Length: 183
Ligand SMILES: [Ca+2]
Ligand SMILES: [Ca+2]
Image (cartoon, rainbow, N blue to C red; front, side, top):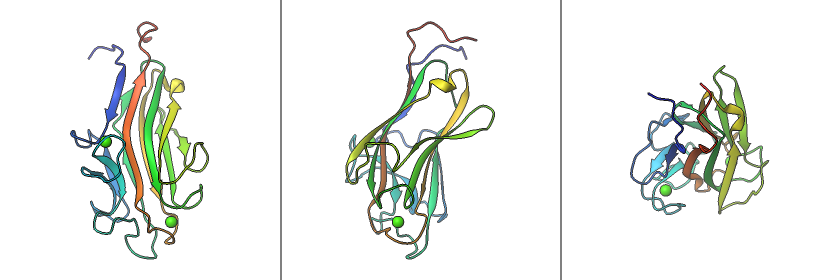
């Protein structure tokens, strides 16, 4: 493999290509309760598939009524060769704010250090039942091999009757116009 700069390091629109090496882990141990690929989603940014935290049988995330749940959706490792950014769209139908129905995005760097890139309830714009574009610069990780992870945690068993969290159009891009990356 050469170390050439690819404008798009990784992307998934969840419409036709499956998970593209993402791995999902849910506290329920169920493939249909928690993070999952939803190919025919009534809510999508790019029709019609999304990554979804929910349950198709109930259309909510109250998997065991009164009990909390959580899950991770983890991207494959990727090498960042130039100034890069993470972009995705998120749609919340859950409790607002940072404490309940927590959602965040983390990055683990080459040294194994995990850093939070984005947290629901902290980074504007913050709205419910609307698609929010999220943009996170990854310039600090140039030259590193990193892994990005989405995390959702209800925190408690209350207020979990919404449709859940939808993610679409995840793109990790980098600027290739400034010469080849430093070896
Ligand atoms: Ca889509
Ligand atoms: Ca809740």
